Length: 69
Image (cartoon, rainbow, N blue to C red; front, top):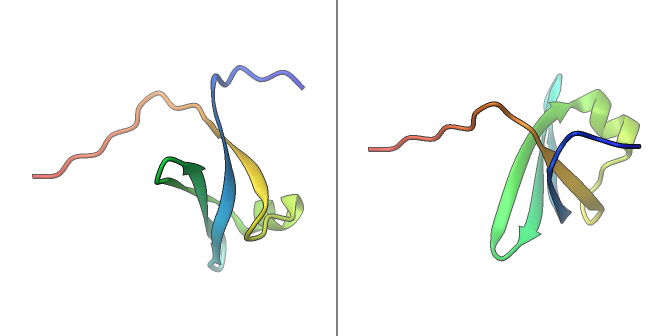
């Protein structure tokens, strides 16, 4: 499979929190950095994602914004 995504980070799943429709998946990508992906519960089940799994985080966005004063 070829993808246009250029930002691929390998990591380990540290937590999966499922809600009614969406799930938060926390991934330790090393260096003290943890990313959280919000995906559907169906996606978590289809991919069989569980704590301890090695996983790739693919990031493709037109913008990522954070602000704090």
